[in-house]
Amino acid sequence: MRKVITYGTFDLIHHGHINILRRAKECGDYLIVGLSTDHFNAQKGKKAYYTYAERKLILESIKYVDEVIPERHWNQKIEDISIYQVDCFVMGSDWEGKFDELKPFCQVIYLPRTEGISTTKIKADLLSQK
Image 1: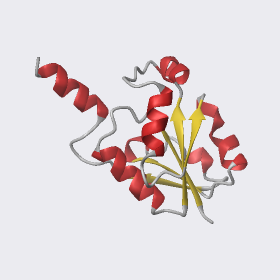
Image 2: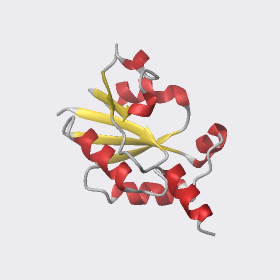
Image 3: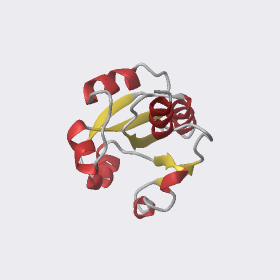
Image 4: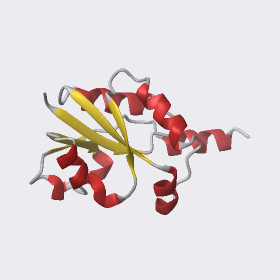
C-alpha cells in the first residue's frame, strides 16, 4: 500500500481543497491529512472560522481522505513520515521547494493549485459584499 500525506488548515472547504485532496489520493492508495490544530494556527498567525474538531469532521467525510492526524508544529513532518510509513508527501505548488528537505525520507510532489479560488479570496470576497 502506497501512503500519501498532505498538511493544511482546510478552513472554509472549497473546490480547490477537494481538487488537491483528490489529486493527492491519486498519488497512492491511502491519504493521510495532517490538519493544523487551533493552537498551531494561532502560532502561525492564522485564524480559522471552524475549530480543529469541526474541520476534522468535515475532512473525514470527504471520500478521498482516509485518516486525519493533528499537525501541532512545523517540525513534525519527518516524524509523521516515519510513524505512518509514508511514501509520498504532497503540497500545493505555492509551497514549491519549501519541503525539499523531506526528499531523503519520501517522494515530494508539489501539485498545481486550482486557479481563482482560495480561503483568503473567499474571505475577501465576503468582506467586499458588505
